[in-house]
Image: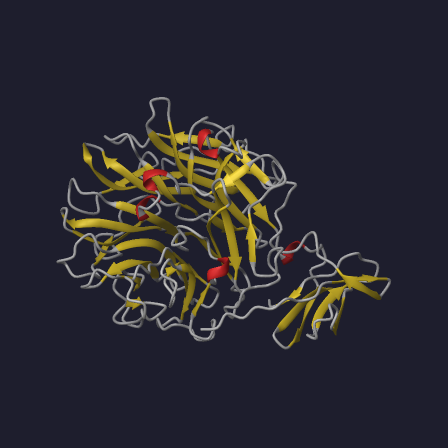
Length: 535
């Protein structure tokens, strides 16, 4: 697989005259510094070590964050915050924009991992909770809030639903949720179907009122074992998505007879059966690269998304030839489960060793696909004090989208101009290496393809481990922010595509003297041209 890179010129037009290359101040991938403290907005409520897990944006452009925080008795509860469109705590949501909910289980360490918003802007949060009568086991648990932040009593009677997916007393882990077009809630994760022995992909579907949907798998639950039963503790479903035909796609990891981890995808029909038109009877097991170095495989899918053509996009770590510590990989599959060769020539794109994080780079925390079918991934990179969020955007064809971010390589870091420092949740301490304790989705898109990044923040930049953390977001602009006039056109020169609004001009030339043609776009009288790169 080849990853192509190129640098494209940016020029200034003044009264129709071409002057000189210049860097733009509002290019796609720039942080919106008008939000919060230099671009990072914070909800400060519990004055403790809050740990955000997931983010979503509702139809009114409000950003919702869910995770766990600790109450006055040092017990973990579900916590949900909402920001308005301007990045302020939304006072129409639970009065101050933040709500803490005790799920009422027998244990004291309930974990919210997943978040979705339905068509009525109701907030659905899922996680794992200790069984209500047994603190030695955990179940899937889900709550639903009204748009005003109250528990929705039309869901499960009191706004909360608990489902024991595995054996009584076993540990079930809900990792992801989504809502389909009929407002049914779908949750996935892993559970112990044989106590202390076997972990399988476990998926359930609830009706809009919170009951198990018997039209899905007969009883609302579906189990899929992908690994040999002798291995045990093997299969871990990490994410779930629903396509336009209401088929349910679940991705994660599974192990073979040699305890090697692989990327695993499962697609179910709307009725919960394995979809025979996908892969091998509904299952795809795939490794991006041939192992020629003798190292163990530790590939796995962390995130799943669906693009406008029902193609499946996945993200996770993979181990390329000669790169034993892994890189971030994005794969795209056709609707039949084959790797899509129109994406990066072989279906897999990855960050290169020189721009991959230097440590713990096997973790990816975010995947979204924008309205141009461009995948955007996010993870953590060490900055000398803590692991800070970084994003990469790929073009629809799988190349680095070079007009995203300030460096011309398709990447952008979360670095505001204020005193607030954002980090990725749960990188440090004993939870760092456990796949079950990672953030599940740190990225979300609004209707304008603006990117919302969630993290945990502190103002103690030098010693961030010593300061309490709060939920926080940062917003990044896209091409859709370039102006109010939506009349636009595209011009292609070789592999470069420029986008222009009405009244702007485009021209081709070697503007930086490197012997390679550049493509520039600008308007008479403006002091900045648009970015010309691979869209």
